[in-house]
Amino acid sequence: MSEAFDPKGESQAPEPTRRLVLALGAAAASTVVTIKPALAQTAGSVLNCEIPIPSPQAAGSYIAPDGSLVPAGTEGAVPPLPRPLTGEEAKQLLNGGLTPAGMDAESSQAYANYIRRLQAGMSGFTCYASLQMPR
Image 1 (cartoon, rainbow, N blue to C red):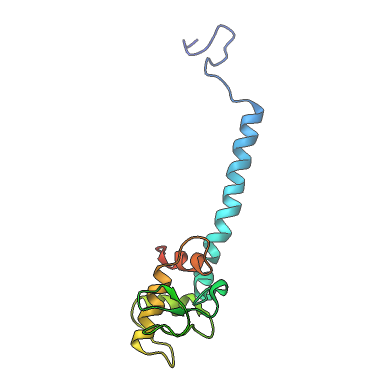
Image 2: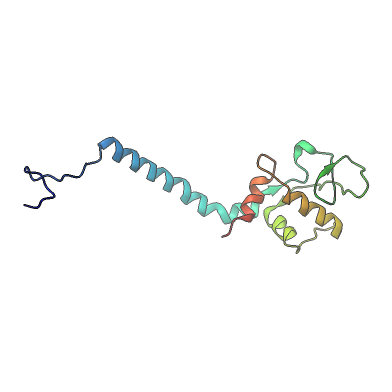
């Protein structure tokens, strides 16, 4: 007999309890169930997500050239967009490749700066964050 076994022929290594094995199995299964659909939907959701400019809570505010929100009529500020940008439009706008119809270069820059200033909890942040993820 090998020295790794006790006199009864059993291993000296501690065996995991049934509860531990079940817990690890459940955690692994939920991870697979959670991540797999998320990865499958990532490409489509990035194209279809929306970024309102400005957020609904700031409706009526204008966008300053630096992307901050200012009161309507502020000199140099641009009016809000009439509809949210899709993720694909935002991606192109941020890369300097899109100027939506009826929008001049100054407006495009102000909207791009607004998007870059989005933070967690703001409308459109999740969409913006997904645009930053490498594929």
